[in-house]
Image (cartoon, rainbow, N blue to C red):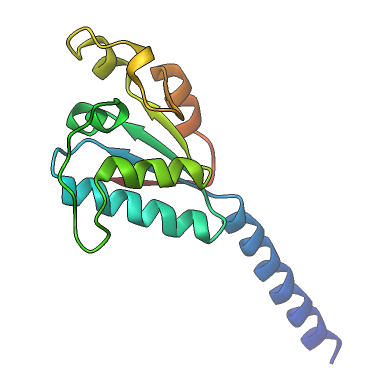
Length: 142
């Protein structure tokens, strides 16, 4: 009987530990694709994660970096009637950290940080490298 009790206690402890580890995870979403539908799906899934109290960090690079700039002229998508950038803004408002790849910024034809939409900052390879090395980071690339 005592052995069974210890097994139950061990099982419950394992469940609590796994739940704590899962709760501490961060979703790292890297958006590099130019297609508005792909960008939108990245934002929709990021919002879903945020709605489930998962921390989200988004890195925009390559054609995905276009979303970071004011004046973005993307397609309005169905069924939301929003652009990918509008969905990105909802992700920012929901609490995600959104960053622009410094290589994209440096090669974006003279654009400046003043042109970034509110809530987007330029990151560095060192900052992203340190973040990626943390336990509990789950990666999704679009």
